[in-house]
Length: 274
Length: 254
Image 1 (spheres, rainbow over the protein chains, first blue to last red):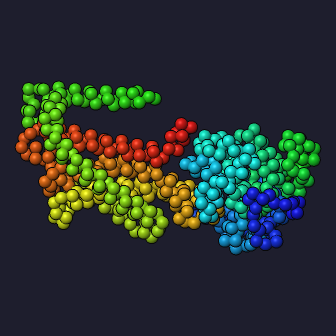
Image 2 (image 1 turned 30 degrees about the vertical axis):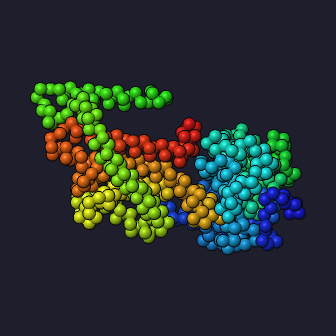
Image 3 (image 1 turned 45 degrees about the horizontal axis):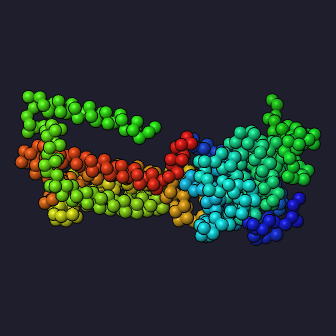
């Protein structure tokens, strides 16, 4: 666990309390469908991630993974149960503790890559020029300096996702919530992006909740993997991943220990036989 | 596509139309007082140019100032309705219903209220242009994806920061669509305003010429009014290209 690891200086988050992890206790969330039926997205979910841990949540489509992140991010409240992020359980507290990265990059087409990332600082009151100056070192550190001036439409999907991740980092929050960050990418780009993210997280350690439907991605990036059932999402398995990240992806995913864990996760995901 | 290849089809269509017009006007059965031919129209344009241009300048001023008023008040109304939901709920249906009022019949009333001169013309132009500007800007402001608004909320952005950095820029293309529509109808508004009572302007000139059976001058006036509307439309398009440069990059990618 990375509890004692020193945080990198560039975007140092200011944890308000001792524990900056994430905790869910008996969280239930219901919706009304357009036909008026009640849909239970999450039922009695218990989950936790300690400070610096990367919790990967894997489950089939529609198991309430995105709902889970929106609740944690403070964009909604659960119907039952309680949840906390960054040591606070109030909705405003969670909103201030978490940086949320949605599935799509949602970059503003009229802003350059640098200005898009700097948006996270600008909305906190940093003047535009100063925000860009503060974002630039991060671009240099992650090898994106030459793309800083490009408009989103000029960038590939993988590159746009990297910019979106830098925007998330620059928000300066202790907890990162990543919703299928590479879901829209082709498998080759995706593998490269997973390696890039592993390195980025090693350089900028945070408490992370990563939601994905890709078991390999979860095992490769997570220090712990939670497997959810189909809707309503409940916890069906929890796997600890022995980690010395970042690891080269190809070596890792072919490691027998890794494939054994993958087997376990896939078995947990399998629907019960009739 | 090059500009020449883009302009060729409409130019051909226009030329065909003008040729047909000339042919019909030259028929023996067609009275010169009923229909002026293109050549007579061009001759009238050349002969009366100083007179026509004086009138056109007055009308252009009415149109531009009226449009400016519509943009200012339309922007205030759209942003207000966007930010204050009860206001939108109350005002939007009324705004749509107001379009059923034939603005033309209001022109004489405005002249009664505001006297001859510039004011009633501005009022009529602004009234006609207000609707397309307001409705398009409001639609643009509301077209921002819910996910993007969630992201802004999660980044800690205030309502005004989201409006300024996301919603207003995102609404620009839609605003300019409205402005282009407004630019073309604005000239119609100015003409009606002048018909209701004026002592100068191109619309008044056309009305007088019609009463005096100077048909070629009427046609020359119509040509100038059309050119004015087309010019304003193109100007609005140019302004859009300057204000919304990212759209071209996106289109090139698509």
